[in-house]
Length: 311
Ligand SMILES: Nc1nc2c(ncn2[C@@H]2O[C@H](COP(=O)(O)OP(=O)(O)OP(=O)(O)O)[C@@H](O)[C@H]2O)c(=O)[nH]1
Ligand SMILES: [Mg+2]
Image 1: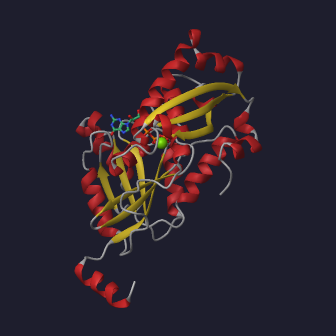
Image 2: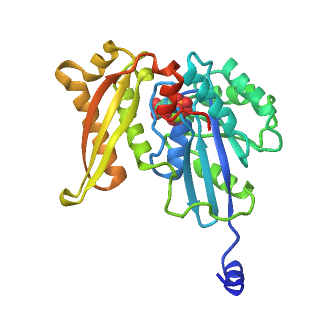
Image 3: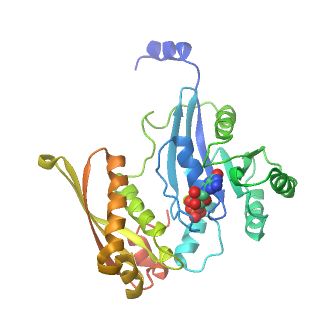
C-alpha cells in the first residue's frame, strides 16, 4: 500500500481501538457464557458443571470502533490432579500481557476463599484495569446484589464495578462500550468476520465434550476428553464426515457414556451433530467411539496429546 493511500485511510476513517482482555474467575461463574454473548456466537462451551473450560479460548469482537480479543480461561480452583494444575496455570498466565481484566463473580454466592485468592493474584498484575463483573443478576434480589458489591468494593481498586447478566445480556452493551473506550488505539488484529482463531477441529471436539457434560454427573464429566480422529469434507455428498473418540478414565464411566443399548451415546451424537452443523454450515456425519485411558488427567503425555501442554 502506498503512503498516500494510507494517509487517506487515516483521515477518512476514525481511529480504531483494540486489545486483549482476559476473563477470569472461579469455576461456573459464567465466564464462557459472557464471552459467547459478547461475540454473538458459541466458541466456548458452557455447562452447569464447574471446570467446564480447560483451555484458554479466544473470542473476537469486531465493531466499527475497534476490536476486542477476549480470552476466556479455566476457572481458578484448588487443583486435584495435573490437568487441574495446568488449567489454573493457564488462567493465571493469561493475565500477563492483556490490556484489561474482567474478574467475574457469581451474585448468587457470597465471596469465598477462592475469590480472595484471585484478588491476591490480581494485586500482582500492575497497571492493568480490572473490571469487577457481578454476574447472574437476573436471579438475585437487589439487596443481595448490594451486599455482594459492598463485600468486594474495598478489596481492590477496580476500574469499574458492573452488575451484569451474561444470560440475558443485562448491562453487557454498557460493558463493551466502556471497554472499547478504555482500550488503546490500535488496528484490527483479525479479519472482521473472524470470531475465533481456534481450528474448527478443536471447537468440534469441545462441542462433543459439552454434550457429554450436559448428560453426566459427579466425576464422569470431569473424566471426559474428546479427540477428533479424522475429519474430511466429502464434496460429492456435500457433507462433513467426523470420526471422534470420547475418552473416559474407567470402564464404568465408559458404560455410563454409552448408556442402555447405546442410548446416551446416540443422544450425545445427535445433539453434537446439530451444533457442528450450525458451526460449519453444512451437513455432518458424526461417528463416536468411547475409549478408556486410565487416569489420563494425571499423565503428562496424555495431557500433551489432548493439547494441554505448557505453552
Ligand atoms: N441465571 C444465570 N445463569 C448464568 C448466567 N451466566 C452463566 N450462567 C449459568 O452458569 C453456568 C456456568 O456458566 P459457564 O459460562 O459455563 O461458566 P464458566 O465460568 O465459564 O465456568 P468454567 O468454565 O467451569 O470455569 C451455566 O449453567 C450457565 O448457564 C447468568 O447471567 N444468569
Ligand atoms: Mg468456561
